[in-house]
Length: 117
Image (cartoon, rainbow, N blue to C red):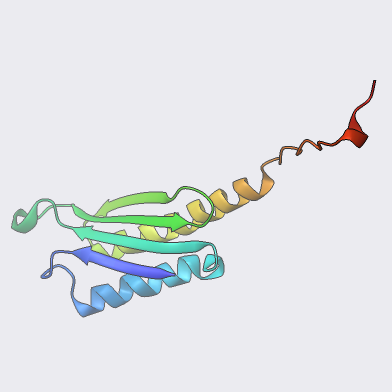
């Protein structure tokens, strides 16, 4: 599983980068063979004006079907990362279970032996 962390350089310290990587691994570790890549985007829309606006957007590309996208906003970047990682783990689990439980369509069998009059 490839994890890519993006954002403004001054917002992403090595500690924030390591925290995000650790939380994503913790949330998706059991699905590692089903997750191809995870992209984490960290931002601060209001910038120096402050406010409750640290944003964490996470996108996971899953093997065999479309990806999962989660967005969390909060006053603390660490809390936004924690909540986004937790929600991502639940969403990936639901997506995998849904795909596993989906009924499979029967494949038609063609051949002269199967034709009836």
